[in-house]
Image (cartoon, rainbow, N blue to C red; front, side, top):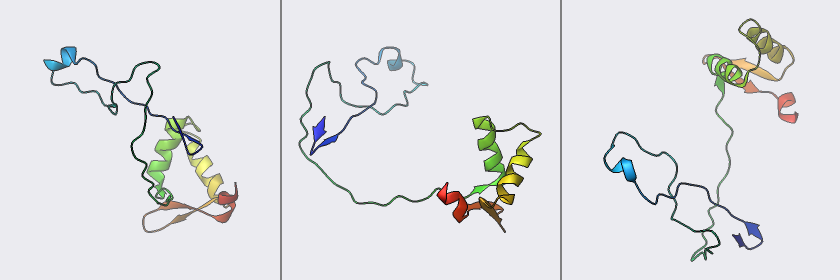
Length: 112
C-alpha cells in the first residue's frame, strides 16, 4: 500500500484452519499473525500513527561472542580466528576494553 508517497508492506502468517493444531497442543507457529487477505483485496488504513525514535548501536561484543559470530558467518577456521582478531586489533579497527574484555569500534572502523 502507498501512503504519503511511501510504500508499506506486511508479512506474516494467515491462519485459515488450525487443523491438527486443534488437537496437537505441543506445536505452535512462530510467525506473526496477520488478518486473512485474498489476492486483489484492497486494504484501507483507518489511522496513521507516527512514533519518533532513535536508533542505538549494538552492544559491544565479547571475544566469545565475536568468535561465535565469525563461526556462524564462516569467517576463518579454528586455526585462523585468533589471527583475524589480532589483525583487527593491530590495524586499529577496534580496541579491547577491560574489565569486560569487549571490543569497541575506533574511528577508522566507523569510516569503513
